Image 1 (tube, rainbow, N blue to C red):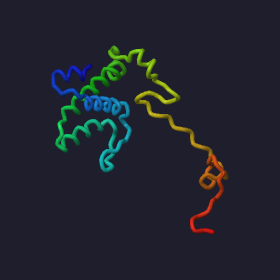
Image 2 (cartoon, rainbow, N blue to C red):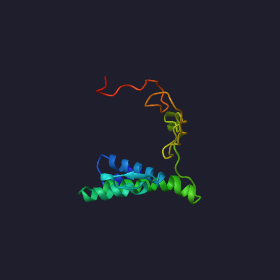
Image 3 (spheres, rainbow, N blue to C red):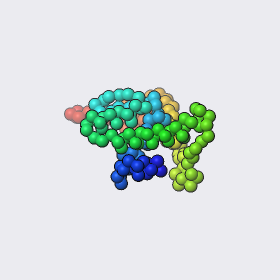
Image 4 (spheres, rainbow, N blue to C red):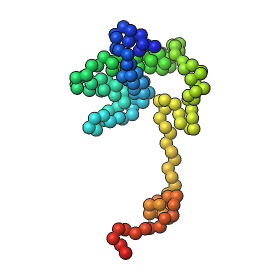
Amino acid sequence: LTLLFLNCIVGLGLLLMIPLIMSVLYVWAQLNRETIVSFWFGTRFKACYLPWVILGFNYIIGGSVVNELIGNLVGHLYFFLMFKYPMDLGGRSFLSTPDFLYRFLPNRRGGVSGFGAPPSRRPAAPEAGGGGGGGGMGGRHAWGAGFRLGDD
């Protein structure tokens, strides 16, 4: 709704895809602040800077940054009203997901958690000798040692 309202004021046009993607990216980046992400040519930095790096990169290559900036601002507004204000500042929760969306798109499915939660680590496989499937590394198949190319 905020994007539609800003579209009427600023006149972004009929396509609001870039601001919507940037707002979702901003929320993801704030929920995963400490995650290290890679950008062009292996540049690595924390995820909380990713929306601003994309905005700066688009400015450098000569594009309009209005869409990215509006997406970041809408994402910041959502993140503040959904997480910061109620949890950190003890305020009232203004936003909540409607129940009919949880019926169609459940928050948990098959052990996979929601939008911003990192996956849990799998327990390490026990070191078992023998077995094949890569030379005794505990694989599922006992295929044997095999033959190298060129051997008779």
